[in-house]
Length: 386
Image (cartoon, rainbow, N blue to C red):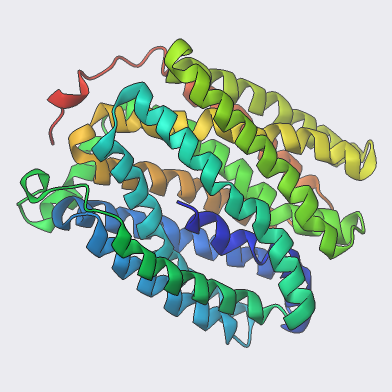
């Protein structure tokens, strides 16, 4: 699950230096995140049905090989456009690990227990983005920004070796025996389920805001507010600590209050924090610290929104866990394309584009979460087939 984070967070502090070295605009480098999200979204739609048909381990290994190739391509790129292309390849590989890890949770756990386990895993995986910008900044200062991508190559190789310590969680008896094209056709059925769309929308809008934050903060902090690049990782890490704290809280409360109620509460807090972020970004009230507080609150809502939205969707069609995980992930990260893309498109040297994108994302997440109240459940999770 950590590959989504390490693939992006490691090189965030180096983005201004990369832009200067490659003679690219700030907005162009921000599109490297958008390109990654395009590959990540498309990749999930492919790997989900493949893992339902062939099991979890073999597709994960193939994805890691693609990740290694894409990371090596980024390390040797000579232009921003080339980096964007290799980032798509990198993301196609990384998406396999993320979508399959969620499917493995569904293979092993159900209902509130699944939501609790996802929250626990997100606490563990938060270590990667917590350390990523700090390590990335030091690596870039010591050996240059290209060394960051060579480090990702090494991590991919190590993960490929470690993959063989993980048992197969989808036995042949539970795999889809039909044609792979039939497995892809199940997406059309899933898209008719209102509750799945509501869960995916709540997480998707939030991801749009989160990737607006990822794309916008390096330039908002370093360029606009003149924060030294080596300190960027510390501020980014504060947000990750907030994510870890709310995931721990969610894991403890989900069996008591239910995933849906915690999802609505998290979306409400995110909407309020997003609006506050837009106001501060527009008025520059409080300077850097005035911007940090609402951003911290918004990002911390990850612990209440992401795990509960994924677990809720998986509970609707547990027998197609790979496909559901892929569809939800693709819609969520696809929304991140819009979030990071809008920040890059309207980049004006200020935090304003990031602020209003985050505000709209928080409001959209809340509206989708609230719609779960009106959307009836389809049935018990074991009764669902496509």
